[in-house]
Length: 475
Image (cartoon, rainbow, N blue to C red; front, top):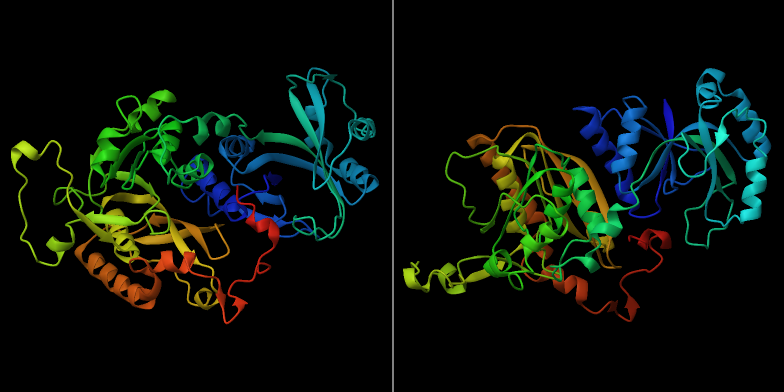
């Protein structure tokens, strides 16, 4: 069956990939690839109204809608048209065997009028509801807990200057709600009420989206090698996954801001299972013993790319340059010792992350991470994401952060086992990628590109109108 999928109007690039990931989660392997999409006539690709065919029954649609962050609702579409007369004709033509089970005297119902890009007054809503008298409802009206909810969804033929995706003509939909979003999730986990956060703590909506892309659920083990204050692991734990994290900064992992304000207190605040462990570990020198592999079901992280916070690795400048030899920390200083660190370029960080994921993820496991992209026209022509022979890229979702740069959420699935031959192929692809992107991936270059003066020869380097205005509404 084709359903009407209505999205919230935010994070536009993330909407379809999230539904496909949740179809994979609830429908089993291959279900995500079986999802089909169709755009309504006279609607822009960024419209919140999409037709979707799911590889399952209504239960799958309800599960997807309830867990999704960006799906407002999924509906069995009884009809649509440019006018209410066309809508009536479509509803009358809809098969009775699909309608009558929800119109019985034993069932209760409620009709809700909603809109996009316009406001419908209470009086107009009542008039619209009364206009559906031709539908043979035999049950009673229940406004609090109805058995069935029916929605009238209306979008107008507004102009092109109101910040919304263009629509060629007015469209009215009528359908039965199959599943709806959980409206209580984001207010519960919003960062402003969380005990322990930092300057780069992941926004709660984005953290839950990443957990959905990573297919977090009970019985799965999720790892974040750049755990920070634990925002991503909190989202994964909410969905029932077991979690592990690591960070190079021992003060973040061990101390936080005191015994009652640390990464552990965030899990205690939401009554979530604590991580199995949080390690002080370096992504450049991972602590795993030789031969250990394929233990994580998902690796979900936000690597440091040098705009708000730069990456660090173990060693220190003098040690890496060979000025001083490797040393051993005396036993009496180990408890309070903070190891020396050196700058960690984005190219090296991404390479180490892919190598770690190729070795430690199970077959079918997912690597989900953010990757920064400059929005300069010169770079757009050569933009290419990191690759590894173990992985297949299944989704790339852009989040525009400024006129100068954005970040792309990459979702990769492990499709090949990790071998020495695969490791060599991965090194070759890394070298090729690094040579093509050396200019901006090294230490400090991305930061300079983002914060340098914007004018060249008296002309702005970036065109403010290069993208539709509504695409900037990412939160």
